[in-house]
View 1: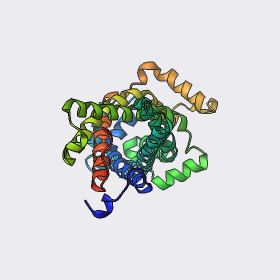
View 2 (view 1 turned 135 degrees about the vertical axis):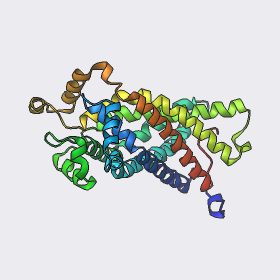
View 3 (view 1 turned 60 degrees about the horizontal axis):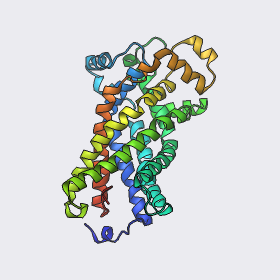
Length: 314
């Protein structure tokens, strides 16, 4: 550990600056790494014909382009979720500190976790929403009667899609469903993580400072995995609706009558029903559990690297 990082005071501007940076690094790399799973999940959610199994088999059949197509939207994911991670983790650390100072000493810390994570995600999604819309359109766009696989051999570029959605005024079409998906997701993610970390240290009957850095990072990894499982389940219905909102309408008659986001939500729910809100859940549980565990591992490893304490348990 360098002398520079040793001198970083807790809750100083440098402390929060590293938290913002660590969040960006953590989320950009982890989300882009699982683009293939996200693509299969998204297409299964927006199509009434495709199942996860059929979608995956279709990609496998593409000898020359299958792997490339599985990572459609990967660059958009890298930048979009890098921005979201920047806000999610950085603002969480900031709000957690501010709310802890604001409330009385005996105030239940669980409520601080919930409030801080909700506040952070609200701001983080404003950063994410435009590129989330771009990514979903890249992954679901079908031109005329061409299949996704055939069309995406010359797939939509990130900048071209962004400009098109900006011109159409659709970059923030999905912001409300995104909040409905991500805010409960992040509240569960951060609060469950913090509580599991506390539980592990309590059961081990050790203070965090008594464990080495590798052991602390391992606690973050395990806690992140179980937190990811919980938040995947909680947020799946809203995830389905976000995918639906950002995908093209298949029914030409519906295009003429649907004028607002609420009308589109009602239309989509009428088509899929309550059962349809859980489409893609098995894939999403695998994806989010692995994603969340790796995010916490990278984030807290980065904090260790720059000389800051890991998250939770203090």
